[in-house]
Image 1: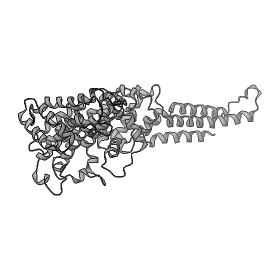
Image 2: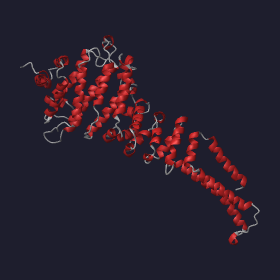
Image 3: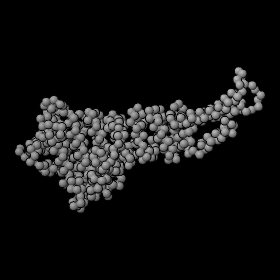
Image 4: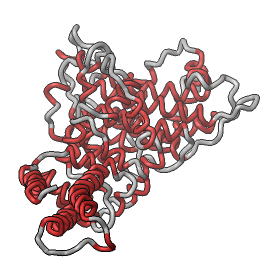
Length: 485
């Protein structure tokens, strides 16, 4: 290599740094070890000087002059080239080690300013297991909502992958989880949407990828993670915020055929309220399946139910329109119907999971999750009894009847609870009494609410054996009288 070639090589490297975008420049400086290339160029320069300068020196150890000149030429060429390749390999690996931990924040800040996040995604993905050593200020920039949204929209779920690491999760404050969950609720690219749609419908032919399923299994479907991350909070608060804003009122108090549709793409698949509810249901369902007994904040479902009911308006022209679904005429009615049905299904799941495989089957006493389910479902029924002007009388009855029928099924028709419950199952009286007692507490001293409850009970179909057999008992428990007394 000649001196001109070496200077050309150095000039190209300087030009690369000069024309690189700010994010790429910081990345190159951080990972490519510019000092290493600089030292190699300096060493090559020394070798060229030794070879070409008229110093009048003789080769040491009696080496032949042609061999020494050839060695100096090869060395002057290989040293900067190998140093450049080594630096490229270091940049490509992008491992955050040593002092690099302290400086990577500047790269994140540059990416945020320039709105260029490909390099951030590459660096984070190459360091998924050792980012817990990042300074809190760097983590704050990394989980900035703009950065999270940009990467999610580009089909990168690296932030949720980071959160799935329990050790890394422990090093974070809550704002990181809040940013990621809020973005996932609203992004077109979201494992939350994919999981909800796959389970409950809303988009035909949606591809729920293996990677998304694996990520959900490590996060929202893993009760330990769900509780440790407090992932319930951004779900419920996002839903309540959008309801409180009133932005949905005009559309969600109108005919809801497009919202409830199962064919094509329904609008509920992009509704943050619906996605929040169903994501919480999936998390609670998984906890029940894994017999995980901690506070899962089932009260969130009641909070959303109450917020939806407050925004709902009974417009007779809409609710009785031939274009409406008589079961749930508006999107708000659909949400109320679904939350009530979800609480019923989760309660049934809790019952099924408590039943032993012995003969005859024996149900264990209700655990913490079951008690919270009964409590919050009864709160929904109590709230619905105060829904005059918000829903139709028939809709109010249909919601309340589901709770009453569940009690009667537990006492006199266990197979009506769910497919995993046999009629000869023992120990279900404790479950029946739990749901009755919670309802009694909600309506204690509430004469107007009790009248609504009586009207709903009077509309039960007593042609069903389990209803007719338990009707008088339930009536006496709730109102202190029965028709046979």
